[in-house]
Amino acid sequence: MKIHRFVLVLSIFILVALSCSLPTIGSGGSGLNLSDANLGAKVSTSFTIHRLYTYEGVDKTGSPLKVVSETLYMEQTEPQWSSYSMTSLNANGQPVGDSGMEGAYQNGKNYAIGGGKCWVNPDKTSHESGFNPGASYLQDMQGTARQAQKGVNVYNVTADRYTLDKSNLRWFEHEDGNLKSANLYVAEKEGYFLRYDGIFQMNKPNLSDIKQKDFDPNKPILITFAVEQNFFSAGTLKVKIPALCANSQ
View 1 (spheres, rainbow, N blue to C red):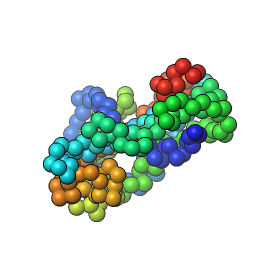
View 2 (view 1 turned 30 degrees about the vertical axis):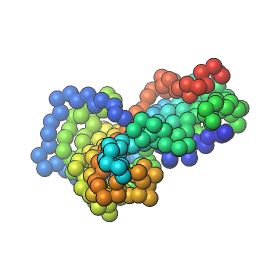
View 3 (view 1 turned 120 degrees about the horizontal axis):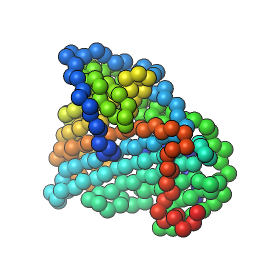
């Protein structure tokens, strides 16, 4: 089972604590063009990107239902090219079908999980050096965001926080529901995005979506989402491999 890097990056990747150091609150705030090329311009040879979506409501019997969709991707090129990727979908803590995937490239080997086993094959992929991890997520944003806060510390990077409304998010723009809150954190100096998060209440679930299909079709669901990227100095990121492959290195 071979894992292709771009399929994983685009199909994937939080609850990471944001440490805030005496931020100042903006009054009115300035606007940020969400088409600004700088937002997705950060290219790195060592990074992680994490995506977490949680869906909460009741199922067709009226019982509580919580669906969690999560993706994590790690990559570095020094001292040698290595990566790890994981995507999972759980309902009330139990995996949903065969929707999960996990694998890694390390030390010239391709590790992949399938059928509850670790499969190891030679890594014959021609890997690229340096990648822009977050650019694909920004394609879902549009319009102008309003600056709400300055001096926020995200992964030890000083950032500005911008608020988003429903029209800024293409995947919610035409949904029947209410965007309760949404934020975008942008590095103050270099202008690239570090994190965005929010809460959206849908009046009715989208039953064509595997993540929503088991909810009561006539009851609202609450969607909490967060996507963040973290950059590291070359050679300092400890890229993991699947736990099932620990004895196969």
